[in-house]
Image (cartoon, rainbow, N blue to C red):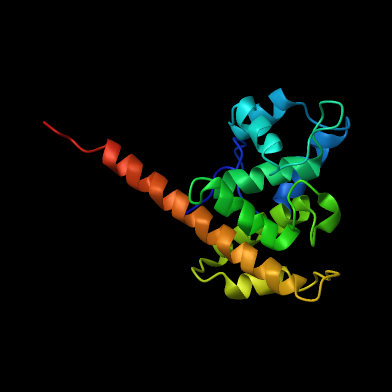
Length: 184
């Protein structure tokens, strides 16, 4: 199952190691993205993102600009939201980053989590593997978190994200096949 979009976005790309950083880094040279840019990039309505801020799933923008970390939190939520409820999604992300509206208790920055996730998908796609455990362990081997079980939590969250992403893609394929049924 080849990925043709950067996960959680509307951006067409072929997955390769480091692609998330290549695409996202230049977007923040001007100091941040406004809500309309985030909406265009993610395909999400602005009121949805504002609701996530209100509900504490995302810290508020500063001077109406979102940081790379905030964008990646939005992308992480966007990847998980089609499989999990928002509360379940918050629980998964909170497992690695505590209170979602408070970045000071994070085990890993959301942009690093997103980059690990995309790099894992790229490696799985490249080697044709269905089992993420070895790939996740290899990609995250250099992670040195300050929390005792941070590396273990990171691997667990990445396995959940990969499985949810795959489930979403399979669901999309099923819906496409369903749409092709001929009811003559």
